[in-house]
Image 1 (cartoon, rainbow, N blue to C red):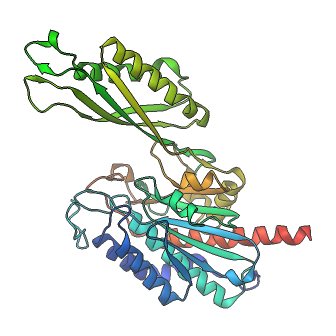
Image 2 (cartoon, rainbow, N blue to C red; image 1 turned 120 degrees about the vertical axis):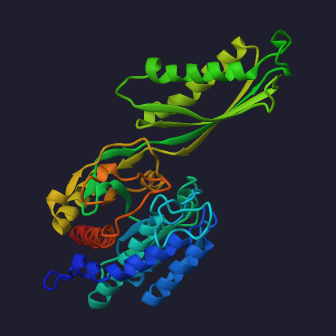
Image 3 (cartoon, rainbow, N blue to C red; image 1 turned 45 degrees about the horizontal axis):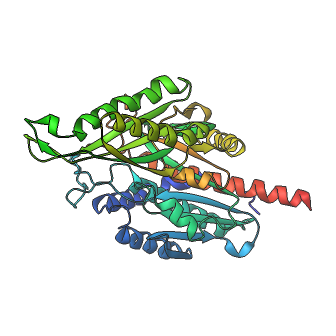
Amino acid sequence: MISSQNPFDMLAQAKRLAPALTEWRRELHRFPELSLEESETAERICRELDRIGIPYRANVGGHGIIAEIGSENGGPLIALRADMDALPIQEETGLDFASERPGLMHACGHDAHTAMLIGAAELLEQLYRQQSLPGTLRLLFQPAEEVNAGANAMIMDGALQDVRELYGLHNLPTLPAGKVATKQGPLMGSVDRIEITLEGRGGHGAIPDQSIDPIVCAAAIIQSLQGIVSRELSPFDPVVVTIGSITSGNANNVIPQYAVMTGTVRTFNPEVRVTLPERIERIVNHVAEGHRCKARLKYIEQVPVLMNHWEQTEATEAIIDGLIGREAREEAKPTLAGEDFSVYLNEIPGCFFWLGSGPPDNAESAYGLHHPKYTLNEECLPIGAALLAEIAVNRLQVLADAVQKTK
């Protein structure tokens, strides 16, 4: 059992690891890999786990890794997760350790998340050498978060088997390093994709009466879709329907045969989400019919609303307050940006929170996630590693104590 007589100072130990955490993060930053291509990143993680002496299973859900500490102990199982993929963005930071791969960048900070979880692994292994654990700690290094595919793939390969609770974080450059933001219930929106294909009749741009113009139809559909948000749904249920791309034609004087649009649909309310495919399909079909076009809608559900569980969030907030102080924690503002951590939380209870990674002063002016000039304040690295490790150990003990009381 974890000793209360000789407590392990997680934050102090994490600060001693700060130089190593920075080195790990910078190496990962220099060599980013896209979703589904994270083989070198996985190799680097495995080398660190080998050094620390933690057993693991590689090639989980693609290039994912599952590592475990104390698996021989039985008892409850708590999991921590970090994502590790990068983005197709050309870096413009000018950092000494900027990406060495043209067109690729860790613009979302997954390099930092991975470094923090490696740090948490080292902290937890140090603790385990000193005292026994009342259960098992599982570490999930997840690929393909940016394409909303990694969590499902990891689950299919057994990542959540026997897991009682799961915890994770995401850095936030508009929140100062040293701060944390938490929220009960919905924190991030669901993410769905729409693909709309319109077929008209091609012809000469100077003789439109002999054609059926899919571009005019596409414009009408884009405008009409906004009526779902403004006129069909409650203003207290935020929804975003965004058309992000239109492809049609290749000449200025030709009416094309086809127009193809893709878009994203976001909401906080799972009940509203269920109604959106029918609403969108109705508008697309009726507007297309009015413009004499044929329409085909493909609605692709990707990830659900990220819904933090009450008990686990309350416990996480107490642990944060105890480790870095109540004054360092604030309530998170909900965002319709998505995260496939929500897929895990659909299966088991847990909590996901924001870790400040911005400058100490005027963090709101910092470049945001997915920006080519996004930078991360590396002072957040030991804080994130310590919080992940402390949450895991604390919740493991709570669950183990609950089992003992029932015997």
